[in-house]
Image 1: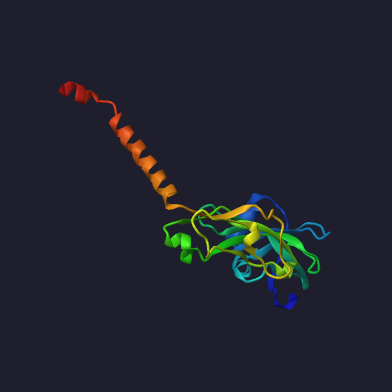
Image 2: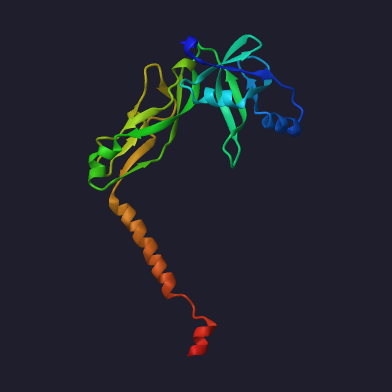
Length: 215
């Protein structure tokens, strides 16, 4: 499976402070660090466009190419610009393709729109958006799912109901609540409370000086 991994060419860089980092970004490069796997941390730079394409590709493992040598790695952290959303820094972790690792992947609730609960006016409430799984690096899925197509109002689905691909196990506790089907009255009551509070505030508004003068 390693032959199907995404490849990304990186180059070593020297750590010279924030001014050097800003210069790299102006040149269309993203700074990063490769660590773990028994090797020393390696500061590198990578083309921003190539990095963006690699991170959008399927599969968690990326083959980092440095001076002809390839190192399988997974993304561990990515920093983004607070306004533009572009990647400003990445951390990659070296991996052994024959050893399982832990990873955090998105959890997707599916089938809710056709469930009996939604047909009765209920609301799908997803409490968990991510789960921790363990798998070989090349077997890490992009996401895992939990099927709530049979959910009725009042039902709660725990992580025990998560559907996992072969070779993937959950690290989180199986009895952790993940998705619930809420009754519509819970939403209506919340809206009624807000309306009631608004009315009370309106009734209790103090008179202005202009009102007193009119009297």
